[in-house]
Image (cartoon, rainbow, N blue to C red; front, side, top):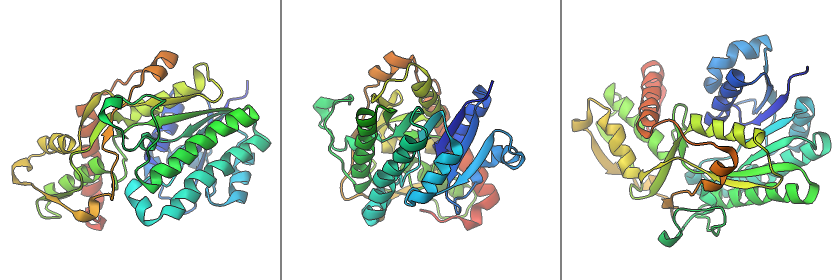
Length: 339
């Protein structure tokens, strides 16, 4: 029997790389991963031997802003399952590059889905939107369910509203099995250092090795977040496409532990032998013009449909994140910026 084929856009990212590892361990699927020719492959280090041997993992080169490259990659992959994870995913960056963000995330999603409509219309497709679509939510609407009004608070969030609606449109207009998720804060090893908790962990790791002064630079510490582990997130995404997929369905997914960004920092500091030496300093460049400051999900709909529940404790997630940065700083520390 021929193995199923899966197409992962953004395979070199935190989520994409963890998802590929999950699929290797838990399925017999062949994995076709879309990446840009210049994308770092660090996150795929556990899969390099398979990629070189062409053993179940294959890289396809393309860019969400290049229609022909997307059409070519989709035609080569001929997928049964699709995880569209690739995006310009940094909210703070989107204030400086709004047009690039819109093109990559909205038009890029159109390019992917239209190529699939032409060559793999029967594929089961996951389109990854974001909890940022909800943006500025009043307290009385917490926890946030799927029908909460969109009030995006960044160009990135606006682009993810477009991504969300494009996915649902292709399901309704063309009968494609497209499902959309709004994943709330998810983190762990390989989290990009442009995200708050990851830059905290990176700075702490650099302080521990005396590469920078004992000062952690921060933005808004008052935002409320619900934290999930990336490894729980990819398990959720697998269940999304394999447990009775529903055309046009959309789900909120997230963890159980809600706290402020400041409390996340406190937890990370509690793991460090240097905690008593470290000062906190607000860096104006790390503040967004406006912020989505109440991000607490109601995940009942997804959990009822799939049976998924988060399993990895909050403290383990943050400890693993800090240990990830300790490892990287130990081997590469002198080349890091403190962004």
